[in-house]
Image 1 (cartoon, rainbow, N blue to C red):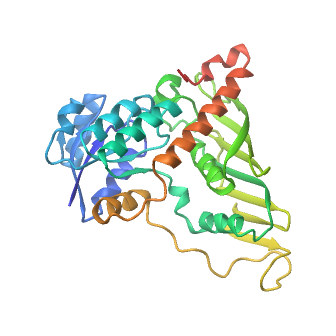
Image 2: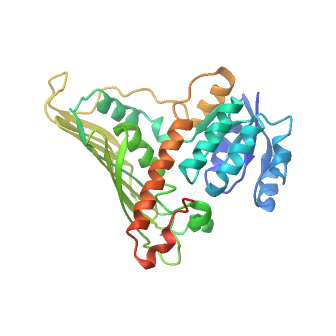
Image 3: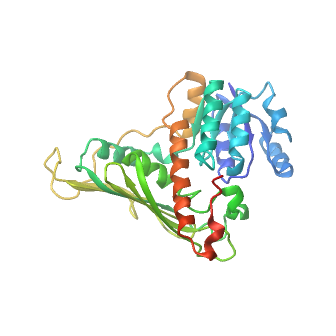
Length: 337
């Protein structure tokens, strides 16, 4: 049995992770900490778990083996290094930390403690994205010259995102920093090492201090380009991933949620657009991979290195914005100190 403490209900995904854990017979939620004690006590009562107002007291509990971190992003370095120092296994919401320097601090603490670490990259567990990775790696459409990936919702325009998600200090940014993390880590995973990023962010909704509509263009070391799109102001916006190569193209998702490929290198000699007869098997959800990694020592495909790579992309994308910002967009700065 892995006894787990939930560290904050700040992120909207926190309660979903708790529900996933409650369905696993090999895991048990035993304690809760929250930077807002009233919220934490209420959640602990709902979970039937103990509440600790002091993080260090919680981390000394003998009935806590591991922690799930959904604290504000600007507190990740504090929370995660403390958890590692107490030799607790760590699952964390993205992004890993605000700066690459903070990621290195976390990584050093985790490696020193020898604990199991997982960052939540759920789009890397899907059959369709696993197939896209295979298409790129095996050059099934030749060399990939352009990737486009879009993940968006209407949390700002429809008003259902919590107000604290528009705080540039605790969040570090807006739509790109949060939802845009998914297309960012997919782009890095599929295309490889980035060398240059340019950003265009704006705020469609009024009264918010961060962007809710954002696009980044990334150049990779292989000369391929990536277009990363995200939004808090898009309704009925399906997940889309597109690869364009020297010998063909791949479309994933879209309105009909299909995988379609066309290639001059088709092994079957098929002409025109086709749907693969079989996709890779899905991986378990990230939190399941983490629990298995703790119990069985099985590898976790997204950990410290991948988390640091994502923060690097985010930090540079917001640095570019700051370098080209106009006075009315000063509020979108990422604090990189």
